[in-house]
Length: 200
Image (cartoon, rainbow, N blue to C red; front, top):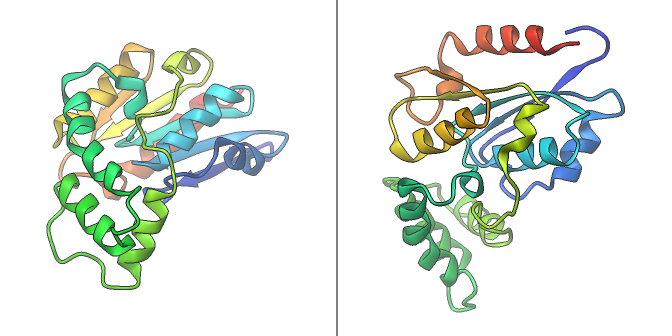
């Protein structure tokens, strides 16, 4: 990449990380941002806020539901998840109970993480805004070269990806790893090619 430009990585556990933290990590020279699932919310918010610092974006299965509101799959997801998040405000619902309901609503199957990891997940998720509640759009893509990589297995993530493509992003499908296309043998090559083409 050269010139001191470095990547910043965000994963699915980075739900609720503020865009300011991403911008701070990029430093004065900026850098490339790579994000997976919920981590893509902070990544895209950072790009929308400071496109001059985000040299490029690579988004693996981005959970940027706010950018695709109105889509059939996104609206179904919001309807199914909203009651779960409403439970988050009830003191009688423990962090572990909330995390279990959250995972079931996502379609995950047991076994779930054991305690105390399950409660830690519940505390983290219930403490931040829902991924669809942010107010911004995908116009940043005109200034930030964006590659979206999906696994081609889930209509919800396909719909988000297509919304980003309509705004100017490039999309690649790496099948066989479902929600973790970053584990595909071609993922590293795509990252390097995207970074190389994005360095000015």
